[in-house]
Amino acid sequence: MADSDLWLVVGLGNPGPRYAGNRHNVGQMIVELLARRAGAELTTHRSRASVADTRLGTGPGGVPGPRVILARPGTYMNVSGPPVAALAQFYSIEPGRILVAHDELDLAPDSLRLKVGGGEGGHNGLRSITRALGTKDYARLRVGIGRPPGRMDAADYVLQNFSAAEHGELGVTLEIAGDTVADVVAEGLQRTQMRLHTAD
Image 1 (cartoon, rainbow, N blue to C red):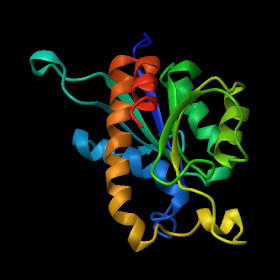
Image 2: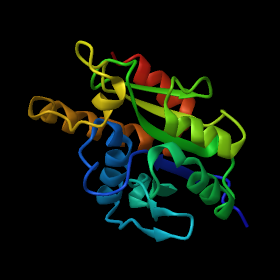
Image 3: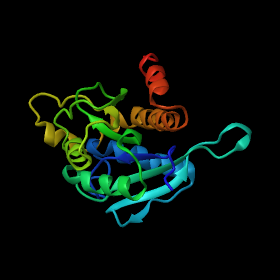
């Protein structure tokens, strides 16, 4: 029987140590942070993703927080969709309870935004997920990385590591992003969205 309160939280990025510190992998960084917080290990799943079936936070009276599936696709960014669709099917999770964390060129560095549906803004990971799910109606946690400097190509920019100067603020942003995901799972997207977007 499906758990109607269950969320699937996906962190986008490219696999392997070569890409681990890239701007494009900030979604994976969030999922990895959430797994560490929960004391959970991301393990290989037949969907071609690393997965942790865990609970986020603690409710009133020390009760364990809501159950969530944390996922890091093991495929390259532009083919993220099939693993996400396979996980949604395996755990019987509707698109409306999928939250995808990803980098966003069109937002200022370290800013966070939540939205449901809409365009993919040229993001190949989102485009693949939309195609695989057959809908755009899933939630996205957009993590601002800003536009590339000068005439640098956007594809080169997202595949660069965060600079040493960016790392201090990045740590803070990841923690806030982790809190935001936990709030979505515990309180719902609309309430969290309102709080996040009025906090600036």
